[in-house]
Length: 221
Length: 250
Ligand SMILES: Nc1ncnc2c1ncn2[C@@H]1O[C@H](COP(=O)(O)OP(=O)(O)O)[C@@H](O)[C@H]1O
Ligand SMILES: [Mg+2]
Image (tube, rainbow over the protein chains, first blue to last red):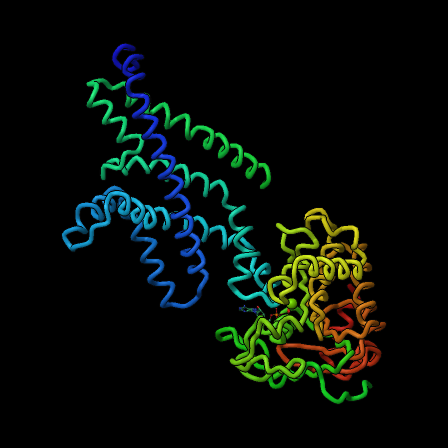
């Protein structure tokens, strides 16, 4: 068993490939998390506009990209859009897909955060002459982010896991590299190693998250 | 009676406000002269807060006009954010920014709206905090301050912008009784410095000592107005009398 699933010689051979994959996964995360957050902030700010022709399309947009499976979205961008003459390459497709999908999720989290800030905060800010956008940026958003920090972190955890989807468009991130190594070595050890690396990467975030959630619970009491 | 001033700082004319089917302000006229302290009393729901909020356009009047310090607030060409620097507002629930220090609360608009540099804003903010007796609390977060201290920081936040008029919406209603005095003291000093003030409050003692005029509002209208002695001791209207006797017995 151990010979098959955790073979030391194979692990040693596959290690550089896996390490390159890990590097790409990290780089990808560092790209798609800020991208998704930026999209989320824009959507959340738009959600504070009380105009029908903003609200309605916004709601449709968010609902659509939350309901649409990200894998399907990615494959559509990668394999479907070229038929319309639009080729973005694997990397571009991943960036756009994550922007659309995780942006919608971050947007919902941040919207809930904004709504948790009492109206008196924005009124106080406006009464001193801050514009709507200034009041949102300096007064509301910092409090909103703090109020939904556990949800933001947990969403970020999901996003990092989702970067493994990029393997379907041949982006050499951790999962893709592990499968390469596996097919080269005819052995599942690289997959197991990748799983362990994912776990080691994300486990601290999970720990941090439960600590935050416990503290939030304690604070509410 | 208050001598009529040449030009009032606040002139609100025929203000109506509807919230959907609810007619909350029914043609309110209000003029406030320079250095005058106008007190507004009235039962809960009579429209006092709404009237005050129309004076800095936190609430958009359905009709009427509001001119403050010569600026027509309802003119679409008016830069409302610029105009609001001249109109300080203090809220019942303080509304301090909980993620900023006392000084941060006071300097935010100085830096973002009045365009002051950080050092200059800090100096102005420190001076404003000193005026409300909280020079030594500049680095405290709101949660570390008592209610009375928080409300004084909120007053400092408003006066730091050197407004021409200050609006107070029940500034002491959310405070424990023993903390009310410190806030009223700051308001008294503000009045002595010549600040024009419109105060919604039921602190009758303060009104007697500091108000030039008391307005009684009911059901969206100003029912009666006059000097505090007259309104509190000998109101002309039955509704005013009933209300006064009710708050006296609280
Ligand atoms: N944003 C709002 N939407 C709907 N109704 C409101 C709103 N603000 C105030 N009202 C209503 O207007 C009336 C007057 O309220 P308000 O001005 O707060 O009275 P007061 O300050 O004298 O207690 C109340 O009936 C209140 O419910
Ligand atoms: Mg009120």
